[in-house]
Image 1 (cartoon, helix red, strand yellow):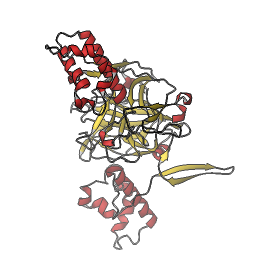
Image 2 (cartoon, helix red, strand yellow; image 1 turned 90 degrees about the vertical axis):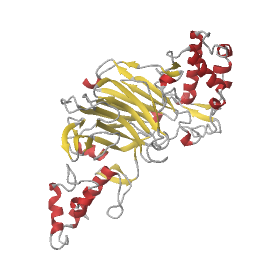
Image 3 (cartoon, helix red, strand yellow; image 1 turned 45 degrees about the vertical axis):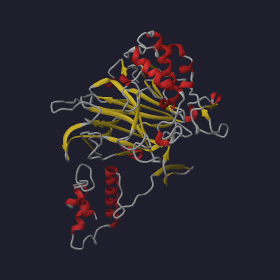
Length: 495
């Protein structure tokens, strides 16, 4: 089996384990070499063979995310547990997900390489998604601990069938709700695509994106003042969906110093911040997509783990080209620390309320003190965030366009499903304004300011109920009468 995986051309067509730190490199040759003796391995040391086979299985799983049963078998993820007595300290491993941030604050300070490898998987990915150019390796050249800092380094070099390498790491621990804070200095350079994001620990609702993805931060190395936050969900590609926040513009080049990216996550909302300034709030008190039936919060009601990486090229960035050069350490993604605070520590329990909504027949979450068809628990964050983003009228639209949009929302039968906008004050309380849209000139004689004001009220209600404002995949905000209120400017505060 070892000989086939290491040296058979058919096996190399799937994954070449002789590259980088692969288990078939010369460093492991002494063990594999004994398999080529005349006794076909009968004289090999069994423990050494099993150890190298374990390395091979781990490498394959990190690269291809499969575990073929004819050669390997998959064990459940193990959770390290430390027990201390008056005479000794022992560490044992218990099968199951490693959940953190449930009852106490969890810190990951990247103190040394061995601890880092205990807590993170360094992925090996020869063929990444999104038309990216890099080969993710598990070499220290691409992912290392330097001066108590995790350093992910993107490089231009020939490796396997690619001309670039980089680092991508996945936490072995996961959390649900609470606050995660990542202090990092992101890379500068054309074609670099750094990201801080979350994927589900278990794919309860199916493969990507059905079980969700939360992008806390995505940046472009050539535009070191811009950043974006997004959630992904819904059915399989090509019908997958996403909702994004505004284009965020910082008042500094954030790649020159360490800054903090934060996500506060409750059953009701996702609150994104940069250097403690709120940048976007995504409501979860809604049916995010019809794929999930009429269930609120899904798929963002499960445990998620953290991913840190620097991609190269791809659909999100321009470049790199042959003449692009990166300088170091500027092109390094340096992560200083991660802190996860429990959900119970970030909410004000005295402000928790039982709310009711007519906009669902399966409101969530249910608790012992708040349940029922239309009831749900509403939590209030201690930070009392205010959404800096508003859903307003698209001022680029003509009076006729605004009229057509208002008439559709308020009076078209298709627009009333599933929300009866026509019965709400934003429609029936605005009849005089809307009424002018029904004049023979299709609204050309309406007052522009009055129309824009009423459309903005409509946008605010749409945003309140659905958490959306023409910011879903496939929706062109320039074509809608409502849109997120432009780019958001934030201030830098070096950490």
